[in-house]
Image: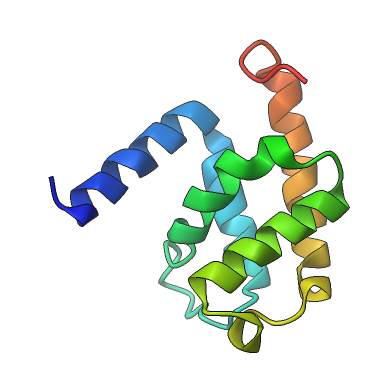
Amino acid sequence: MNERDSRRENRARLKERYHSLYDEVLDILFQHDPIGINFETNTDEYEPEVDTILPRLKEAASTDDLRRIIHEEFMRWFNGEDTAGPEAKYDKIAQAVWAAYQRFKSHFASEFPT
């Protein structure tokens, strides 16, 4: 299996595990567009970042933790702070993702115990 197929399989597993949260986080990133790559038709542009943020949600105990995680992933994907920007830039994204994650956890409590 090549890398592209592997990423595709991983993404399918994440979508199955996280249900609509996957698309909701993708939409949040696309709408806030922290890197400036929203060209209205490329709605999948932030999929790689969602693929690495979702598995780390369980590390977050607060929006501050989540902001740090999201920033870390953007720094990794976009080669550092020069492109990703400062952590504070991700505050509203973290708040929106946190709210979505809390709704998701309450709906799927048996799958994601606290």
